[in-house]
Image 1 (tube, rainbow, N blue to C red):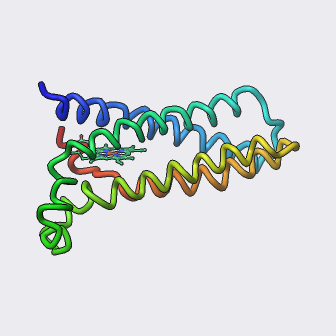
Image 2: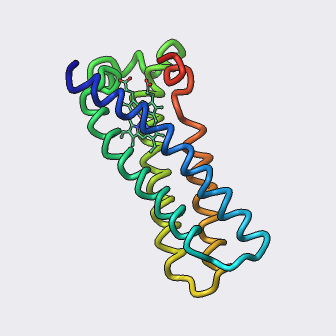
Amino acid sequence: MNAYSILKSAHSGWAYLVVTVLVLATLNALIGFFSKKEFGNRDFSLALGGLIVTHIQLLLGLALWALSPYSNMLFSNFSFLMTPEGRGARLLALEHPLTMIIATTILTIGYSKHKKKITSNGKLKMLSIFYTIALVLVLSRLPWSQWFAM
Ligand code: HEM
């Protein structure tokens, strides 16, 4: 096993945790916001947990990107990536990494904004908006077929 395959397995396995915790944190914030609940320890832990697991995945993803043959194609075979046949490779080399970086940034902004709010509803509103946008972005650009083909 080389560094690339170790990182690929780690990134692939950790993705289950990222998607699960993000779905839970987002649903929890939305339910709390719409039912006007008090912001408690569970809400805080889920929001922080989502942030931590996503940041770890970001680091794994950046290292994987540096070693992946797909990202290498950005420099060696860019014109192929822009063709309809290069769609799958373009997702892995460009669209997935860029979208996940944007999603992680939005998640981080949401987490930091919720901390600055004083009321429970204000905190849950910030988490609902930013975590929902981040989750939709993550789900929209996951390489689903490659992931489940493992
Ligand atoms: C933050 C949430 C992220 C999630 C949930 C996620 C999830 C995944 C999944 C499920 C795969 C398919 C793995 C497989 O083949 O089984 C994958 C592949 C990949 N990811 Fe991510 N990823 C994330 C972030 C990132 C970031 C930030 C980068 C780079 C900056 C990145 C770079 C890559 C690359 C290059 C591949 C393709 C690796 C290869 O097959 O050579 N990912 N990701």
